[in-house]
Image (cartoon, rainbow, N blue to C red; front, side, top):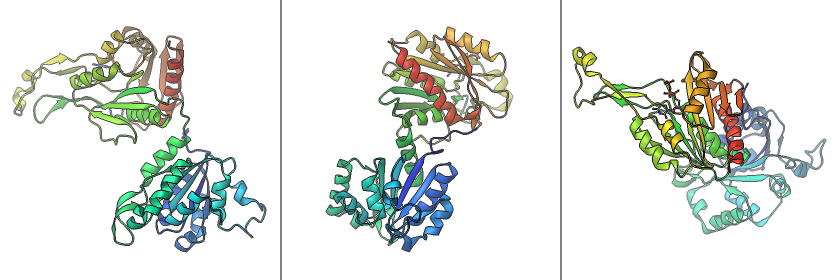
Length: 403
Ligand code: CTP
């Protein structure tokens, strides 16, 4: 079922001689699990730290180490390796390899392949902090940036040499997101997208609140997918345990009224607004300073309506703005979706069936019924991230059609 951005992508990992090479073995393993087609090129120093066999076993492919005598079938490995690939990643990149790339030296398979490729090259430095901050290394990194290489800054912390500072190989989660970004089409570049996610929490007293089952996963997936495609994403989220995707600006709120204020403050500035949040329709009329005793709850719990944020956005919709709603339904999906599309003046509504176990609240996957003025379409049952991409395809189309 899963379509992910890494599946089938040809990625060359160039490993140079740093102790951090062992961490990159984990990266290769993860990329292979994501169904990327990974080829590994190692310098001879890298092979002193981790054996080529390790990378061969993890990638499922032969590992390339030497310029000569290796290309049994292909005498032009240094050219063919970098041809028609989607991405080249140099990790770990030592001060030495950075210096060689900056001056165009091609004295081994890795550096020759990099000169010959026309794919985007990401460089992940890893070295002792003093080597990293040395003016020569900094100058070389600046040159690489000017030459069009993407540099993934190293992290700070304790190094293998027991010194602390900047120079540790960047963490995989962040690097993986940057790889995903580089592999994604930049078809939403610069589009300002506001996404809301999660539930809202409506307090009754210091111990209790009204809320719902929303985890925020769909909204966070939308923010992540839009950001990967180049959009400028503002995520306004109710309480959620999820981590804000890299590159996304997060505003945290608790209640529906806080979400209303935050959304309305940014709405006019957004080209696309996607309201994936499950906003509580009611709140306790009174928020008690002290815990209400159980005998009194039934009589103290009087509810009042929250504002309908999306309805308000529909009334204020600007020319050229695309407004997308969500609806969580357990019956009459099509009829309810159409009703909300019209009554809230939306361009698109994504209806979730919350009656099943594998769609809707708290699940990893989803199946969306997408309704617009031009008709209804059931998207495939897939991951929330892939659902997000499919929904964004339609959003991009609508942005293009608007005056
Ligand atoms: N929504 C909102 N503000 C509210 C309630 C809902 O902005 N107070 C938005 C949700 O973010 C979602 C859409 O409206 O995008 C539909 O939410 P849903 O709860 O399905 O719709 P309701 O209008 O509340 O309809 P009902 O509860 O009657 O099904």
